[in-house]
Length: 148
Image 1: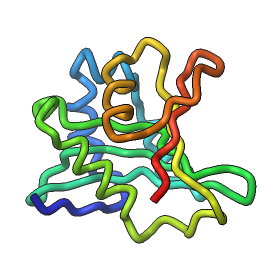
Image 2 (image 1 turned 180 degrees about the vertical axis):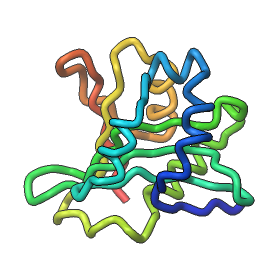
Image 3 (image 1 turned 90 degrees about the vertical axis):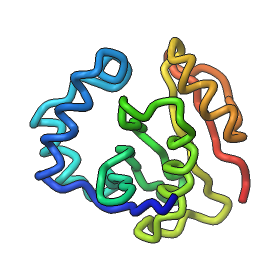
Image 4 (image 1 turned 135 degrees about the vertical axis):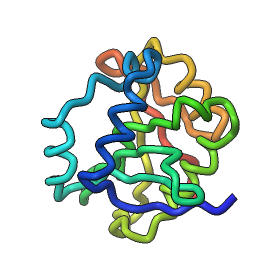
């Protein structure tokens, strides 16, 4: 499977809207609206990425870039609802982390993500990828990626 990672563009809104009609996805990451789209398209301290396979979107992943004190972070991670539980998320995560458009992390920097306490599926996903759960802070589990 060859995946392409690119920046989100305004014309992606049609399929994003369709994905978020899915009750499970909308409940975990939604609701999204045009204000969200404008915000992510105007970001300068991160990026919203689209992962494609054969020209079709398969994942949507938000990233905020770290600075001298903070790690890079994944802010949202969604897989095409029609392709859940196929292993695609693992490949998409690897592709996003390897994307060459990320700035170089600070020395000793790593990737972090935050998962709602009741999102067992995301908790299991990141744990299975070797990410370490640092515990709960303000209702969210903080996970850090394994050292590379």
